[in-house]
Length: 564
Image (cartoon, rainbow, N blue to C red; front, side, top):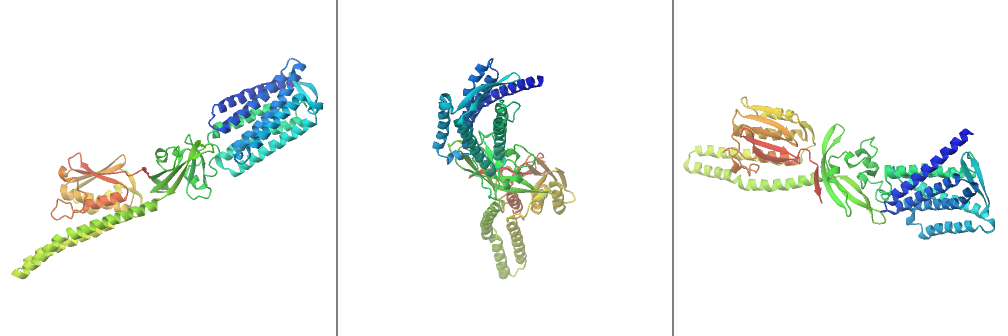
């Protein structure tokens, strides 16, 4: 007897908790009236909570007569709860788009008509008699059903079956977040239905004890989990037609809070395993979350250049990023899709064509202008040798020919450096500097390397950059010059303690043919700039701390945003 009383008290407490939880979620959902699903979920929670409240009121009534009076409102509100469930499901699954609105009105109208018949109870077609059972401290009002009530009960289970078909179909055709949502809602509501079926089958601690309101607590908490954890009132199943499973490019569906609600198989490798609720900052593309922004309308196209690790190899990849807002059928923006397309090869090809065209123009200009002077010298000196018979003029002509050969070699070298660079990999700056110094350095000059930075580059071309910069330092700073290589945030520098470059001559130091040496070609720094730019970097000149020249290379690890 004590155990029965304790169990009855526990049942009353659980039903009371169910009432509070249902009304709490009803209030929360109704406060989010920006979407019809929230309204219908609130209605479902309200009817569930009221059913549990009426049941508790009957159970705790002071007399059997009062308990019996709660039977009619409890029965009617239970039917309203089933109707609210059906309306919620068709809206949540999107079946309301094809289901005629007349069907929903008929479902609501049917329960209202039955409520009137229940109150009138013509010829005892609804209820035959009322009674009250007892279990511990609880009074259990009940009623013997008539033929009309039996038919209504069959209709209720058919309506529940149809809603489960809708929800089950939605569960099977969705993935990831939406499948979790639908699975939770389906599971907890099946428990409620089974509890109600167990009552009518007499499989309860007391044949008159309906435990369905207790299982409302399970349903409320379960759907509440979907509400808070998966936020289906904010990110409803809108991406089914937007997200194409067959697309080869990575596709992410992002909600208004920046959480990745869904993704296609191609995007799975871009998110580290084990992250339960990933955001764009968890995507393995540096800077993607900073350059993207939610869009309320229209499609945005961006280009992002970023380092990307492929196994043990670090490369630079260019992505075309297409961001499209997702709006529901009520024109409310719920999130956006992000489609990534690797356009590294395309951009490299475009850059190569642009570079080739630029080099062709430069080459044409140099051939037509810079080579003309030594050709005129050769022509003039040969003519003088013919006229005077003085063969020393041929020495001057030979020097001019040597000058042209040097210029042609530099031009060919420049043309090669202007081509697309080879495959890039991680290169240790110190090793590249030492290798270049071995080619250029003198016995009296000094190299100081103050960096352990690693960059993504074509190693051969990077060594050429250092060779030309070191050669420039030695030629202009003297054979006892000290050259220092260091790094700073986002770049590295090459500095010397020579005389530097006069301020008035700094503007065109990277131009072809600009040199302060009488026997120089002016191609060295131009080649440096071409190689640096081919890597996507930037080079600038400034004074070193010792007053000499300092060349700074920046933008080594870009996350470049280009809006198109």
